[in-house]
Length: 212
Ligand code: 2DT
Image 1: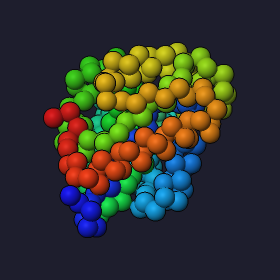
Image 2: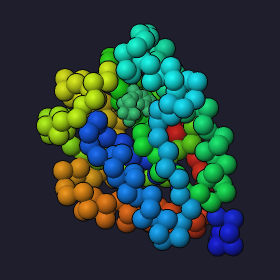
Image 3: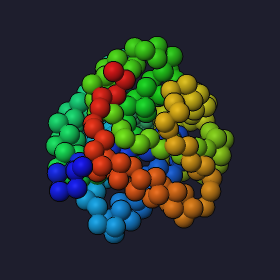
């Protein structure tokens, strides 16, 4: 119904453990969707450019210490401060490819032992993704890839807990992609999923809210 230029963009989220290849895939997906004529932007959370983002960045690089709940709420605030821009972009027809979102927020904090429902609560009311792709890799395989940059969460033992939290959090709507496949194969799968999703949104699927 929305074929006259007033159709919205899609909110596409990539999730997964550190070193699963999310960031490389986001940067490949952007030009390939643009090549098909779509208006696309690539976003990531945490967005380290805002004031809140700088506090998060200092925490992740161990330059500051914060209470587990306080940092959880900062990650959430970092999404809230981008929410209205996100909505405006989507409504103007731009598709957003987002590297991490609320699921990272809940998976990482609940891996520290915080209650899952408590972790979800501040996310309620943010925009719900139209597609969540989980790049699936075992914590051991991810660690073998090397290149953990020494940030706070980049340790095998913790990543194992994060993997469990993601598992608890996932639902049937998530698309699980084997992150150990050749990079081009993953790219092909992602592109197909993204195009399908963009078309569904174009055809009138409405925006909704996460966990509400
Ligand atoms: P990057 O390495 O992708 O920049 O992520 N994290 C992320 C959380 O703990 N909560 C969140 O809400 C988000 C978005 C995951 C930095 C680290 O921050 C973690 C890895």
